[in-house]
Length: 228
Image (cartoon, rainbow, N blue to C red; front, side, top):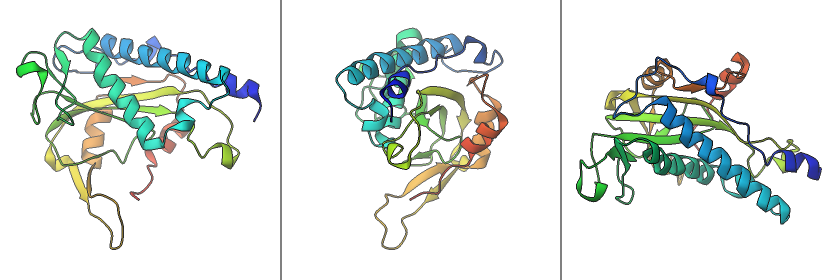
């Protein structure tokens, strides 16, 4: 793959100010502007990191990290950065605490193992198939993005810049989750997945959509892979 194409892919596609939904309802004083600022910060991080890596002839972050680990990095960054802009939210400082962001000052040291109040964050390359460890009553926000994966070069897929494609979110309940068990002989940890009812609630309250996202691309995003 040419160095020029790789270098071009080091510059993520910018977040479009026109892509935010003015009618989206967000909790705890969070606004679309706060989300926008945090997304822009991640775009800057990816640009700086990947340009520096390219200069040292090292692969881009998204092609180094395993897909699930990269998605986790995107989600962790948003959970850590959104509270920098939203005074009503704090990052949950409890290790693996739920949810990822909680009302600021509600719990000692902004740390709680489990609470109903707050916002859980996930990042995914798909608009379906979102998973968690347990069915939860939670305000869930998902950042849907596009990027290369480590195996893309072996498949002959061209370098592509990172981009945020959609952000959706809503209050969902335990009834909006389904539990996927472990197949016989499989090693997959049992997980909970957001059902169509939950996804529809979140899509109806979409927060951001890339203006150039086509219906065909949106349909592709909905075609989440089956659990493995």
